[in-house]
Amino acid sequence: MEKRYLAIKNRLKRRQFIQYGSLFLGGGIVSACTHGSQTPSAMSGRETENQKQSKKLDKITFGTNWLAQAEHGGFYQAIATGIYNDYGLDVTIKMGGPQIPSGTQLLLGGAVDFFMGQGIDAINAIAQGIPKITVAAIFQKDPQCIIAHPNTGVKTLADLKGRPIYVSVSANVTYWPLLKARYGFTDEQKRPYNFNSGPFLADKQSAQQGYITSEPFAIEKQGGFKPVVFLLADYDYTAYATTIETKKELVDKNPDLVKRFVDASIKGWYSYLQNPEPGNQLIKKDNPEMTDEQIKYGLQKLKEYGAIVSGDAEKLGIGAMTAERWQSFFNNMVQAGVFDTSVDYKDAFTLNFVNKGLAYYKS
Image 1 (cartoon, rainbow, N blue to C red):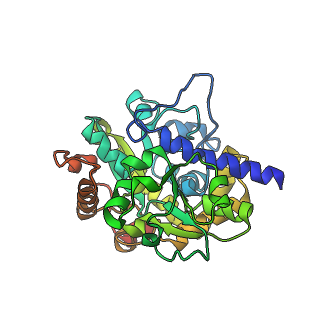
Image 2 (image 1 turned 135 degrees about the vertical axis):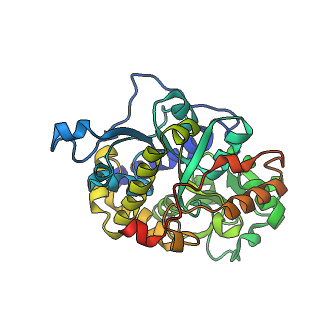
Image 3 (image 1 turned 90 degrees about the horizontal axis):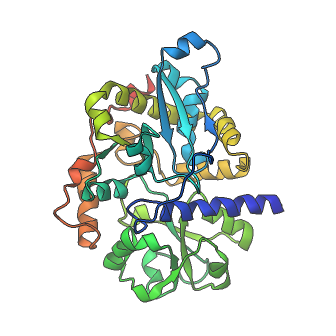
């Protein structure tokens, strides 16, 4: 049991890395990296079957935002089941971690060809003049949530007005301004969140941030109760998440390669949702601390909340994006004071590689 709690504790640390490790969202804080500190990688499942054939495949490196987990399942599934190979790709997954630079650094430095990004970071990149672009959005709903105690009179997110809420520094330039604008939250409510649920557990009137796939699970284990969870995507924070982003140069010079990677990744996600076992085996191989219980919980919550298949994705397919959705999110964040109207948010994405319909992806 002690080992399991250590694994949960280590998993919570990844939120700290994601929040503080971004080139843009964490106030410019960048994680350190040395050539001697490498994370394990999942290699193409069929490369040992026929080395000659493998040489004909286009080699691709895909960077994830943390250690292997259910939230990355479709990409691992596409390796495990040979889907990437079927699309002429030899894909290596490069896991994120505490000593790995931001996705933007990895992309621009040529360490990865594609990276698992976030919609809000994509628009911030445009504001900074960074030449990267989002080509698909696997998560229609960002897993970011606010967690409260049960039986304390909190039934909606608005009920948290005036109560202490533990949030990270980067919340100030992501969802917190929106909560202030929409629900009357104030900065006086904020408490520093150090990615430790102890203060939250000690104060029943408080709330804290988290991910639907992780922190509620840990709180149930540590606190012995099921917390009240508010998915911010259901409360106007409509950013795309677990996006596939790459350099604009690659989209311009080799759109066929981008198309094949996006198509294969999407098919990997459909396969993972049907039978996740092949992908889970690779996830646990890359991240030995990941337990079956945590993987099962994470995937269950992704399905329960419609993180992957909901909204536009129900008709257009996994990975769907629309110009209207990007515009609506941008306008909301402009009103909340996060973005300036001068930012050309349309440069943050392209719809050329998604929205092909269910029949296309399931064929």
